[in-house]
Image (cartoon, rainbow, N blue to C red; front, side, top):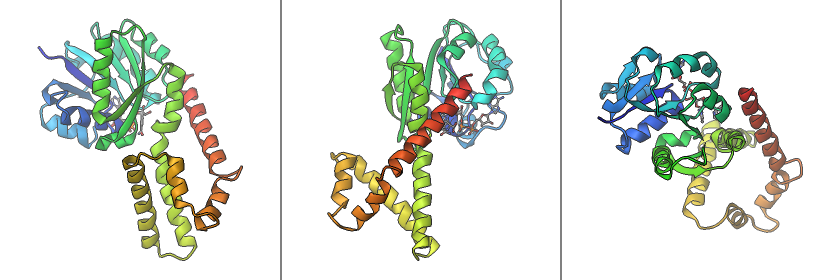
Length: 269
Ligand SMILES: NC(=O)C1=CN([C@@H]2O[C@H](COP(=O)(O)OP(=O)(O)OC[C@H]3O[C@@H](n4cnc5c(N)ncnc54)[C@H](O)[C@@H]3O)[C@@H](O)[C@H]2O)C=CC1
Ligand SMILES: O=C(O)[C@@H]1CCC=N1
């Protein structure tokens, strides 16, 4: 009998992962169970196609072997005991909750294989990047199965330490928001120098889309691509003198990721 995959919390990220699993046929909707009082659109789609929508942990099928934890980290303390009691043996827990450490997961689910992973929202269109950490002693077949599951939504990178997952969270987990904010800032700046709001928004958006697509398609590094835009003594150089100054974007980005890292660590406490 095929195993059941359980998703606890099927909102933005849980939904993106479950959608990737279904689209890549790694999981059949009939082998999926979802616990979420207010499931997102992807989960509703899966439920319409046969996934079980469970009201509580008591209904978890006995053959549940893989559990994706995708609720907000603040929810975890109040559900961990009940969930652990409802699970059988030999289960794999994949947690994408920001800041909840591998040790906290091990304490909650003794005996389970624990994977702590950090995806990002481009996962929703198969363009995510997910870093994960797992017990170094985990058998290679299990690691490959985990990579396949996480790889259904984009690229996968295995990293060594639990603490590095907090750093990943600050960089690629939260990172899409930094880029969307850059888009907002560019549009606002465009308006401030006289462009109509709709034109400003369109130019900012298409610039980010175009630059990202070029970065993906090109063999050149971001530095080389930047240099290709920058004529010596030209307009780009004038802007980069501001952005690359000591108190410019580099410094601002460092402060941003340090703040995100600190927040992730607070969740671990
Ligand atoms: N949104 C993002 O960019 C990323 C989020 N994460 C992590 O993913 C997790 C989920 O985040 P999002 O998907 O953004 O949040 P979300 O709010 O979209 O999804 C959370 C889901 O949990 C459900 N939920 C609430 N109480 C529940 C309960 N008692 N039992 C089961 N489900 C319950 C909600 O109805 C909701 O659908 C968080 O731990 C976050 O740290 C990780 C990487 C990126
Ligand atoms: O903002 C958050 O806490 C989550 C983790 C990474 C992206 N969103």
